[in-house]
Image 1 (cartoon, helix red, strand yellow):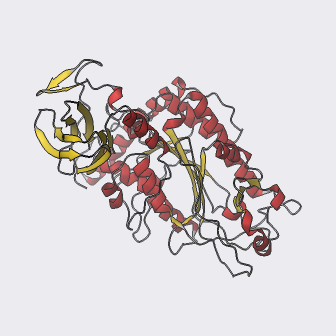
Image 2: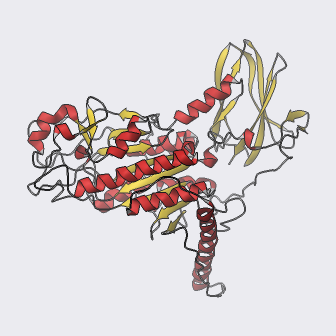
Image 3: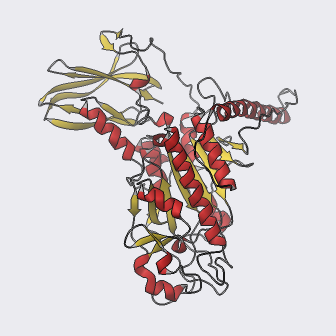
Amino acid sequence: MKRRDFVKNIAIASAGTPILLNNIKMQSLGKKLFDVPKSAEDRVLVIIRLNGGNDGLNTVIPRDQYSNLSVQRNNILIPETSVLPLTAEVGLHPVMTGMQGIYNDGKLSVIQNVGYPEQNRSHFRSMDIWTSGLIDNDPTTGWLGRYFQDYNPNYPDGYPNSTYPDPFAISMGYEVSTTCQGILANFSHAVSNPFDNYNLLTSGAVNDGTYYGDQVEYLANLIDQANGYGAEINAAANAGNTLATYPSTTLGQQLQYVAQMISGGLKTKVYILNVGGFDTHDAQVTSTDTTTGTHANLLQTVSDAVAAFQNDLQLLGIENRVAGMTFSEFGRQVASNGSRGTDHGDAAPLFLFGTCIEGGIVGANPTIGSTVVDQAGVPMEFDFRDIYASILKDWFGVDTTTIQSFFEHTVTYYNVLGACNLGVEEKSLAKDEAILYPNPCSNSSTIRFKSDDEWVRIDIFDFSGRNVGTICDSNLTPGSHDIFFETRDFQQGEYVVQILKKSGNVQTKLIKVR
């Protein structure tokens, strides 16, 4: 990838002081120019990985398929009367009261039948596919690693720095996640306990120009980076707070740490957590009660911790900034085996949680046959890569051209995480304020604004006052308009978008091109 230099934010004047940019009058650059709930710069994604392949049919239960479920998995099936209802057709495992609660609050979405074509049932290969977002090519980078790499091509050289003092991602535990693997280094930082204050000692060796010297220098840079990030993480954890009561589980403790770091001001964008044990080939349920057992314990661990975390975010007043997702490398087979367990299958449900999710059930219930087909899994309805792409678009504001470059297939987008975007846009439009999205952008953006059957001219200026493009110069009908424009030929930096109406009304907006 081509190495690029980066432009730092330009501080023009103190807040509230109007400035003149070659006769373009605008307010000084303060936080109001980037509405925090809309700004991707301030948003956080929490990913919970369910290691081993979760049994989706005993997690999100198709209530309208019970007669055939009793044929397929009679020795592990949850009694119909015990299922926690979400809708008339869909319910949850009875231990998942926490997730049922946040679903009823409109803060949980269930995306059914998520997988990929020609599902691989190997744990290792399938997890490689899920973390990389690649099926046809050997994975060398993760899907979020490519996202971070796109605007930080020099990484890890020179990081952390004054512009990016915090780690881009944090993997809770002792290993970094391959989800965030970049070309030269992993963008995530492993954290077991954010309150640990540690310093790794460098060897003092210098690069003597040999291959060995290059490697020593690279390792020394990583150690310096770990020390720098560690100090920022520790400071944020000590400055932060949590207000909810969390379950006494590893996942509960880790999510509490995440809330502590976010509330303490850490600018990390992605947190990745892991829950193991979902490879339930035998003793998935107990012999006396199918609502209890290994799988029930795992689901309760996830449900209780997520519910506590969501409650904490609300109490801390930061829930509009945080969205979460769960995934597993595959589901289990439709039919149970003779050991009160399930074997490797295909598609499975995926959960999204947060106040900004669209909410509800996405997709149809899987159709369960009355005849047992050997090794049959739940067929895919949604490609997991399209869910990833939709999150990048709606949550982090990445333009669609850039997103498409991250994946091998033609991306399909779903409106799964845009509720807060819509709310902010409606609020801004009600005030007759123009909206730019995505912002920041790489290759393109769209401006949304209102007109009153009048002539409108929209120009883009750089900070020397030079007009670098006119994107509209015509009479527009009354109402809201979306005008797409490309920025792929712009140099990185900040630009002023000026909207001039015949009525004399002038609006200016700032857009960042990276």
